[in-house]
Amino acid sequence: MLKTDVNHAPFSYDGLDRVIHEKARLGLMTSLMAHPKGLAFADLKQLCGLTDGNLSRHLQVLQEAGLVEVTKGYEGNRPHTSCRLTKAGRRRFLDYLAVLERLVRDAAKAAGKEQGALSRLGILPT
Image (cartoon, rainbow, N blue to C red):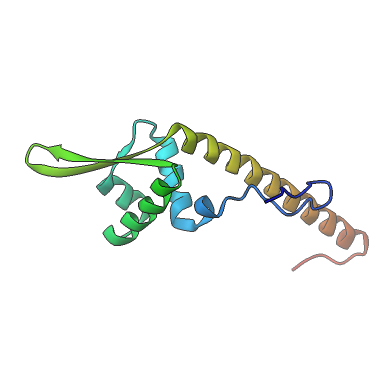
């Protein structure tokens, strides 16, 4: 697939990765980014407000994409699952954030132009 030329489609934001962009996965990636050594399944579940099933499914998607590493084992006699970003996952998330920052700047610039135009016309947004 050819990448869209930014000069011809400046608002296409091709870097907004659909795998990451989903709300729950965005929360998971952010949580794991903040904890480079990884997090236990239960901690991720609490931080992101997900059920066991939802968390498992979203982790599976991220793992299949090579963004997250899931390690299963035991602590004592209890099963223990931990998750962390892969090196590629960290890089891809940082790239995603750069595109998201550009989107926010573009939107703020557009909103500023709109507000400036309304002010010049004597019409203030309600």
